[in-house]
Length: 403
Image (cartoon, rainbow, N blue to C red; front, side, top):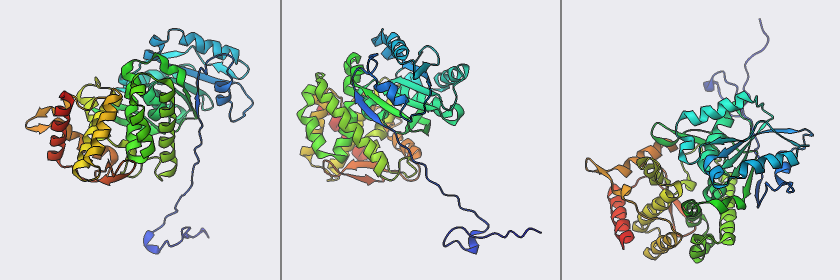
C-alpha cells in the first residue's frame, strides 16, 4: 500500500475542497513596438535586429505574408522584401517567396483564407523557432496571426502594420481573430506578437478612406482616457484630414502607447472579465460592419459608434452638450462619418442595430458592459442601454448629418 497521502498545497484549503492540487504559474510576455520609416531599405538594420533580438546566434527562417491591397498599391514591395533579405542573408532566410494574401475584411471572413495560410506554413515546413512576418492592414494581421497561433501551437509573429488603424490599434495588441457565424471576431486567440514594426512610410499609399478611418480609434481612447490627446485631435483635425504626416505620426504613436499601457496595466490583458474600455463605441460599430456586409470600414463604423454612445452619455449627464458637439465637430472635421442610413434600418418595428447589444454581451461574457465617457478623458461602465435613447441618438445624428 502506498505511503503517499493527499495533502493540501494551498493555504486555506479545507476538506470540503476534496482531493485537489491547485496549479498556478505566470507567463511573462514582452515585445517591442518600433516606430520608424523605410525599414525595408537594404541599408537599414532595424528589421534584421528585430528578428535577432534574442541573440540566438543563428540564421532566422522567415515566411513573409503580404496584404494584397498593399501589394497592389506598392508594386515594388515584393522586390523590396527580397532585396532586404538578400542584403541581410547572414541572419535572415526567406522560407519561400513572399505570399500575397487577401486584404480588407475578406482576409478574415470565413475559414478559407486561414486554411490557405496554414497550408503554406505546412508546405514550407515552418517550425516553432521559425518566424512569420505579416505586412498589411488590421484584418490581414488578424488572419495571419490567428493562423500562425495554430501552427505548432504558435510560431513567432512579427507584425508590420500598413494602415493607420493597424499601426495605432489592431497591430499592437495581443489578439487575433476571424469573422464567423455572422459575427465579427467570433473566433480567435490571444497571441502576443514577437515584435511590431510601425513603418510610417507604408501609410503613403493609403486611400483617403483608410487614412481617416484609423483616426476614429484615436478619438476612442482620447475621449475616455486622455483629455490632452483629445484636444490635440480637435486642434489638428484639418491637418489630419489633409494628410499631415507629422500630425498623423504623433497620433499613431500616442494612440498605440495608450493601447499598450492599458493592456499592460489594466489587470486583464486576455480579457477574462466582461469590461472592455477599449471597445468604447464598438457594440454598434461591429453590428454596422456586418449589416453592411463590411462595406462600412471599421474605423468609419467606430466613429458612428462613438457618436451614438457619446449622445447617450450626454443624456445621462456624463458629458455636456458642448462636449458632445466638440466630439462630433472634431470627428467630422477629420473626415469621419457620424451617421449612415444603416443605423436606422428597421425590421418588424425594431431597429436592427439594437441586436448588436445582445451580440456584444455574448462576446464579452456575463452581463452587458458598455463603456461611456464620464467627462472628457475619463470613463464609466454601464450595464443597460435604453433602446428609446438609442433611437433618439440616431434621429439626432441623422438630422445633424443632413445639415
